[in-house]
Length: 545
Picture 1: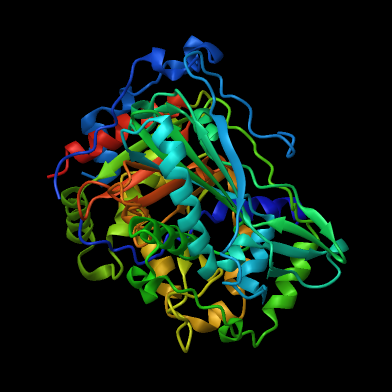
Picture 2: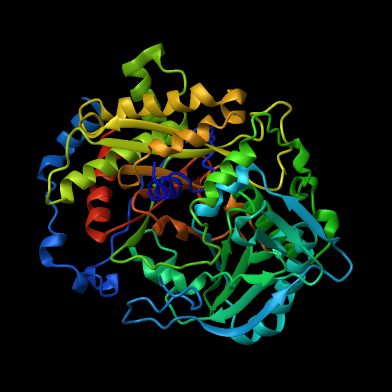
């Protein structure tokens, strides 16, 4: 397989750890409604698409037919992202730009060798997330009180998460093995900014211009040359004030340094330290990272093999931001009650033949079938019925090896679970049921297979994925960023900006911010495709018995 194909397969398959066991506390009531705004709220998107592109043929997806079919009844890396195409808003303006390091003398220098779980992320884009908090404060209070307190608490958090203040050290010409390196003086780039953009618009569930969010996530600094290596920053943070409305905190990180469990652990640790004024007695053991890399077994020499493969693709050490063209972001909620009905529907049709029917599998399968149907409803050219559709998710395998790794292990510890099915079978009468079965079987087959992990067969399976026909999962209900309370209450909204990357489609999946047991779904699609998906998604749930 060519390096180009492999690189695309990697980018399509891996979002963040979706955690295959996101059974989630059985998902309470109230239907999802994607709150549609008028075309005037699309910030000029409609002017960039023809009228015909907004005409959606949903006649074949009447409520009755939907139920029958679903249920069988460069930017330049030296520059920040440019302003989105918006007529109403101004981009964020910088108040302060600084470097935040651990407190002097508090953190020892640290070098961590990268493992085979880390090497594969060298061909992956950077991860970007934004947390939005409702907070009626003004600029004077933000500058005098909030900025100093956030810097102090971040410094304390970095005392425990020192590699995030450091760099990925990659040998020049890839002649050697990369590592994570923190030395005294390393720090995290932090931007404090303000904007007059509409806070309530950004935190809504309705379709929003995807470009608008790039004002609130930073770009990692340029790599620097050092003796024998190139040093690439691991983390950058941007805190933005929406005067009298709220604050957003944007995070950009290099996935090579750590997976979702690692980054979410850091964010929640920072939040706790800030909430309690830096008093570390409130800092529980669940947020103390475990750094011993000797716990990662490599009896088959995976580390050498995977790194040798990565070197062939000349990994990009720069953080390259590519803005999404003609895309909107939408948020959907699938309730505990909906999930229960989906499970009951599957079990009533399959009875005891399925052994892995969980909140995760039915949610992913339902969204997958709705997405494929939305494509058929909006594409002018008919899709080849025999083309293969791919599903991919990443599972945390800290508990899958013997002995298990500590849950606070710092780094990456993910493997891929994949399923595939012909297009015609996914949109057919049994499409939803078959999708649940395939996803469940893919997970169940590998969930306790340590040999499959250690031999690297999970890595080899990635080469079979077609990015253009892929549906992948980012995030996990087990990694609860809505619990990140800086003392301002729970976030009003979480956005996975990284969904915009790649030629396939990624879905973010997290706990609901409002109701325990509900799941929140995020998508980034063309406006036409998003409208079609919303119609099919909501109609299907409304007609569940």
